[in-house]
Amino acid sequence: MCFSNINLVKNKETIKDVTENKVLTNRSCSDEVHLQTLIVGISGKGLKGYVRALFDTGSQNTYISKYAAKMLKLENLRTEKIKHGLFGGGEMSENHNRYRFNLSSIDNKFNCQIEALDQTKICSSLPMIKNEKFIKLLESKGIDIRDVRQHGDHCLFEENPEEIHLLLGADTAACLFTERIEHFPGYEIAAFETNLKMTLFQEETYFTSKRFKGSLPPPAAGPERPSQDAASASSNVTRTGRVIKPPQRLDL
Image 1: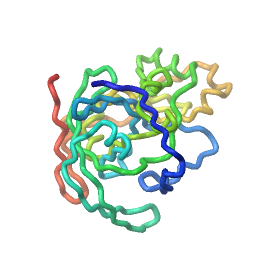
Image 2: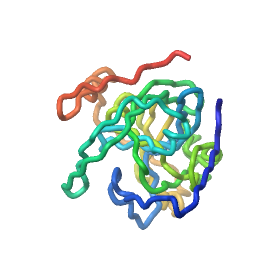
Image 3: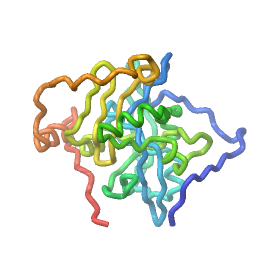
Image 4: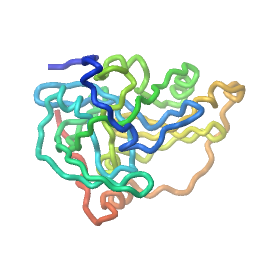
């Protein structure tokens, strides 16, 4: 069974207030800034849906919203008590359900199995890429960005199609990034390739300014990157010495 664009808006009186900065630090910006977001597929027990995901390597764990876990009927492995280190040095303990599910690219060319903890709300809604000139620029460079409105309309959401329902932490993200990084000096843009398609950091004001009319300068030469094997080996151990197991590739 496959579904898309499930929008179940419950009575506002039954929606509990939640703190929006539990996972991410303050997102208070004067200009619209695009973070490392993308659209991915999630498969549960006979169900598959698409959600917007956010890479956050500052988080040790991967998180999925309770709403998405419930709608996709994901496999609940166990409940864990996690102590969270908060921005500013504070700490708090919470119980989280741990789920296992299949993660895939939007074109189904990549599949892997991962685990994630549940969270009532991941963060505030984050903007999709809407600037047509920007999208054409990326396409001219062979960069395929999927976090755009035409794909977002098929994503699972409660109230807002720009909601984030999956946070890919260091335990998962380290095994998803490839070696390809595209830089755009002068425009403060960097596109990162992952097995789930490209994601980027980009400040939209640079593409609405007059500088957008000029040609892009050639990419600046950066330091030599380590091999993919070396990068994977170094990123699979946490600060506490815990070895991170790479996601299991599924041959579907």
